[in-house]
Image 1 (tube, one colour):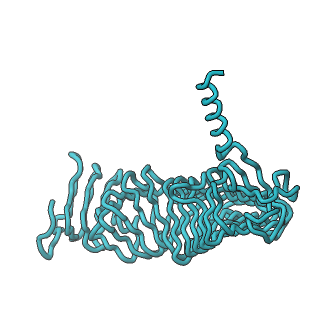
Image 2: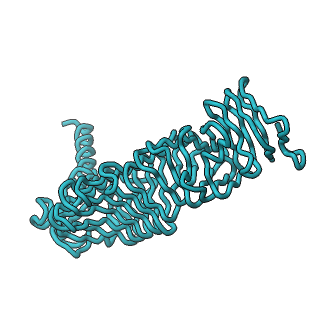
Length: 404
């Protein structure tokens, strides 16, 4: 055999032996009340099967899979050497639980929470000051699946830690209380794609409280139940995003940080609520509600504000268009552009304080029945745009200001 052939074969053999994915295994828990990396925690045969000894998911390679079996509660007590390929909670007659406290678990593929098959049982993945996925190494996807047959709960609870993932799907079970739940208190949930609530609406639940943050770079499709009592929901994608779905989304604080493409509001109910602050965070941010959408329809609430600019498009037509589509108690418009872009005649809202910038892109006509003020720039954007104030109306009646 030629020397170069031997060297080639030896090199290939070394790469094969030391490749992290060569000796990948499917791991199943076999004990409860133990640490992830403890001797005897895992089996490569089946749930409760023969011990794999000191081996555990992520100990030697990046292609391991991990299944948390029924009746087992595991704690991640140390960071794994490698990411794992997937993490599954297999449901079953008893709870399957995992707690991550102060440690990091990387999962390149899916994290799947299956609900228990016995009533009144709850399976929980708890992120307690721990980390599941990072910005550089996000989880592939997160799925929480409620039961179709029994009243049990599958949940992921973030209490001071963080989850970073490619997408989130929360599917409410068909059983009366077949709950699928993701909740966050003082932690952070980041989805680099969509967050979707579907299935039985009452059982598909996303709950946010305290100083939590939920970041979404894709669509937020709410066909479930959003309970957002505190914290901030941030739309920070780089592609067009939508707030959509069959349910009304009621946010505490909502921040639009997508500076590349608009964020549209297109729920089936044509309703959305913001009880705290709606913030347009960046000069190129754009919020585009459907023409029938009303924010805070029941009663005016909260504040709308711009930080560094941003555009709130007014698509509702008719009288007092901005104020009847954006029903806020406090309108801080100084750093905002309000764009009247309806498909039929609109009337400028004159009782919302001073506009920062006012832009007219409506080509069917915009009217004004009373005086109003523009401190920045009034822009007629398009050859066929028309602004027709009533004869007695004065723009900036107190003193000249701004630019037209």
